[in-house]
Image (cartoon, rainbow, N blue to C red; front, side, top):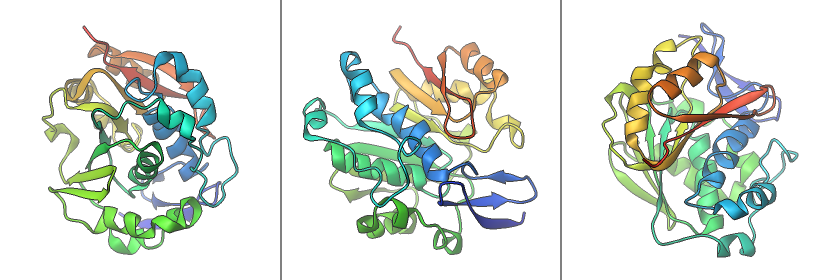
Length: 262
């Protein structure tokens, strides 16, 4: 299928699959969407990171790019006060469904450094992005030029092996189909960033969400940009408690699903 690099509304680039009229990230802002959905409402809202009593305060202090103008180092918003709230006794384990361009992993790596919190990150991707396409993306320039080497490592390092990219961020990339995931009570957070149900409906079914539910630890959360009613119903059918949240630019809502402790 024909692919091309396009510029989204916040100035950041993404990959468009022309035959599907589908993008790896939102045309309304690739970085804005990633920060809003996966960092703000995923990582920074997880109870492993922030206690419920500090939830709203923490979300306000850690503004996403949907709330600030794109600038150099836009995610540098943590404070020493925030870090004092962090439990560093064990790492946060994150599974990304659709590693793609590495944008979500890159933003998470930077947050791990700022929060001084160890994150073990598994990115699953059936069809890795080509190096020539990665070279055309401008995420490092817009987010943190000082992390050029780390961004390159995300893509250069081998698959199927664990790599310590920074003292706080460990990555393992797995090339497989999502239905082949066999993890059991392994992850605190799932970033569900698959192509949309319009073009790949088989990725948004009860079959897939059963695998996701099993992969999460009790109290784990799954976040996604999608807010389709059929997606919400599939999540609830396999046991998730689902909430609708304000979406990133260009979308009215998004979904966050929790695996409640039994």
